Amino acid sequence: MKITEDFIKEILAEDYPSEYQSIYDQSLLLQYLDKKMKAVHGNSKTRRSLANIYAIYSILYFYQFDFYNQPDAYRQFGGYDYMRLFNYYRGLYGGSKLQNHALNSRVNGEFKNKFPDITNDLIIIDNGKYLLHIDYLYVGKYDISKTCCRVIEKYVELLMAKDHALISVLQQMESLTDYDEKKKQINALLTEDAEARIFEIISYAILKNHYKNIKVYFGYSLDNIKEEELQLYKTGRTNANDGGIDFVMRPVGRFFQVTEVNNYDKYLLDIDKVLHFPITFVIKTNQTKKRVLVELSEYIAVRANGMKVIEDRYNMAIEEIITINDLQQWTYDLDNPGIDEILRDIDIYYKLEMNMDAEDEDE
Image 1: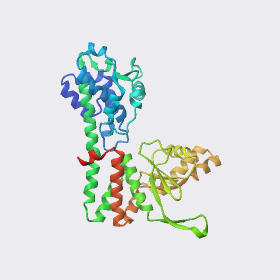
Image 2: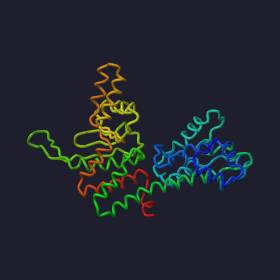
Image 3: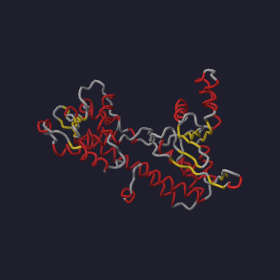
Image 4: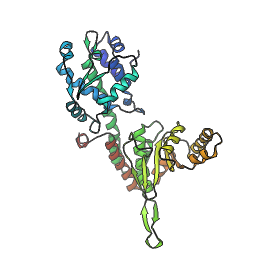
């Protein structure tokens, strides 16, 4: 069986020079971790899975000090207290907002889905205490817990390096005095290969500063009409369960959804989620908005199969299409303070997304 991630292969080769492939082939835990660590790649759309990985790591961390190579003693062990594990992994990089779902059910459910023939759960749960089943800690005579810890620690190290790379780029851009160069470098981040969460954050920063320069007039009567600037708000983190709304606008009440061009069925699902309220789609594509709209309308027509009520329902719910081309043009149109504001917004929301708290930022 092929080891997917090179860093995992390197760690295994260091720990078991002549047997590393055999160890991997016999260890479902190593195979599971290997499958969960694709987020280290620059263009990965995969979630980081820190909740599941940290749930496992928190148990492994204490186990390696208490029971390493002591199978008989471990078989008598009743498990680690929930709060001890929970507090530990909440203190790890990116763990401060994690919930307890992974410890309680999510890891076991996913592990079973990936390896449907297994007999035992990975995590044994017993009245608020947790431990890993010994079946997954040993391969023959080898206790693989320390190797698994090294794999997880290296994964987090690679994620940290990747996260801070954008911060370094932003700091370099902030120091530039040539605003044409700043605009050029911001737009260079807007590519079809950009990581989904990065694209969402950058597109939000651009749209927020683009719309704030547009004025509208509201009032309940002609006598109290007031001039207001459009304000764009981000609804939450990029993986949040937000019901199909990534950004909302005041005072006009527009919904924005960030997505990709390759799955038009998801567009209709997003429309359904908000009960066909009009949505502006911000799309990670270099195609023109006209081309995307034509393709989307054709897809709706196929789905409707001539049913006018269905065609109208979806077509009327598409308020606007915004593509990379539009975002780049609006960046070039902004004045110098607007460009600086884009960089500040990207920095703020990226650190929020990555759970980079004050201690991380000072390092």
